[in-house]
Length: 221
Image 1 (cartoon, rainbow, N blue to C red):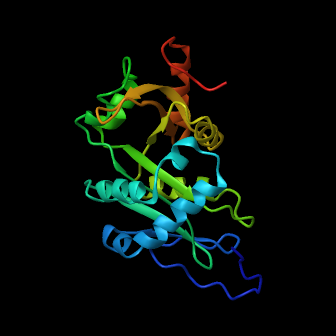
Image 2: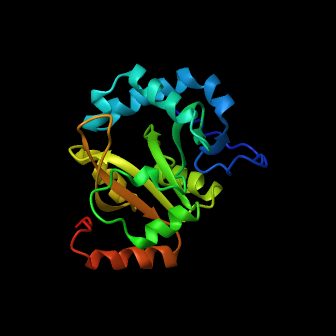
């Protein structure tokens, strides 16, 4: 997708927008606005699957994506941030992890106490999908999207699940700063997921990195 190179006078971003970087601006949208974007989001999903070698992405259909999104929209606290240039070029969405700890019920092993504490204090946010159309003017777009979404919710820890066999997706998340802390099973299927966390802030990072000394914690090389 081509971005116009003609320089324009920058406009002041609205309260739910981030300033343009390389012609790309981020905007927070609520669940009602998402309903109006379903077609564009599904197109973005299909196009992102065509441009990245993610096994899990390619195995799912356009309708699968819309069904998963519909389920996420119904979750309390659902939020989405989109990236726009001359059209939709990226999005990230998810929901807060509830303090009852239910989200962690399929975790294999003992959950680190530092993560339990953040869950109990409602400081953990689950990202369920990041979709990005490659954009040469903003190569760090995926990172910007996730940081904006987590920052809006004042989360101290981001969490996500990636299929254990989806090595390209795992490599991408690790490149964005996510840490692998173990496995999780979901009752809806037999797939094993890697549990990835993104610590925010120096204190959170230091405490989680200390977990690398535990034998059951699996950190990327």
